[in-house]
Image 1 (cartoon, helix red, strand yellow):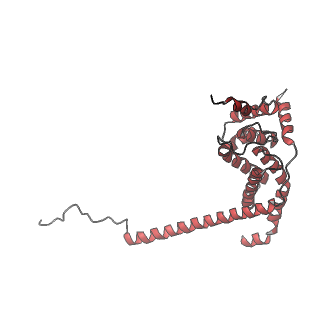
Image 2 (tube, rainbow over the protein chains, first blue to last red; image 1 turned 60 degrees about the vertical axis):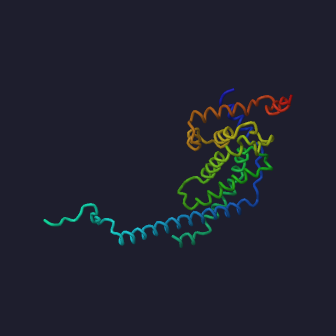
Image 3 (cartoon, each protein chain N blue to C red; image 1 turned 90 degrees about the vertical axis):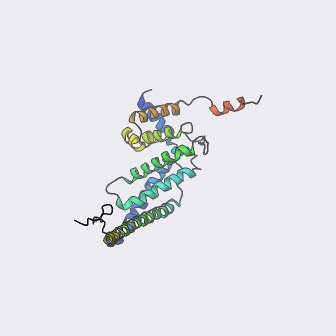
Length: 82
Length: 167
């Protein structure tokens, strides 16, 4: 029995009678698909809001703290009596 | 963008409805083969199909020339592969229905056999979809075909039952 014969025999076994499609399938699919879309949209919106909030918070913090300015030295005593 | 979507509102929905009407029967048959349930009592296959089609619905507007049937089939197969190991594992829940033609096969054998032979997906695509080497897909498909055409005699679990006798 060649490979092709075996494959077609297996295919025939699998054909059989197709199961009946439930009548409310389309409505259920649209309901769940719509929910999936809404969730995805909400997640994307939440991500943008968080990103924006993080950017604003960083800007405010940076403008108050000025992290790029070198802090005054605390370990070396001030030079006096020269 | 929003106006264009609103003006075409009925179009994609009608396309999707036509797609579901055309593809649901075959996809449900595929799903029932995968779960090895009886044709008239297939809650798991229906759940798989509903999820796959819902996923296709969610991606419908973003598809650019892709085949929606292909997408739904991929979703079906991947979801089955992910769910198979813990549902059919050692616990033995949801045993295959004896009326199904693939009842004797393991879930992975069923998955590969159905994708390769019933759906006609290429060996490379099947391997890429399931994350397996091509040789393994080839071997599993061969073994599954052999088991399907020449089933081993006698169910193994029935023999081990009476042997366990307390002394």
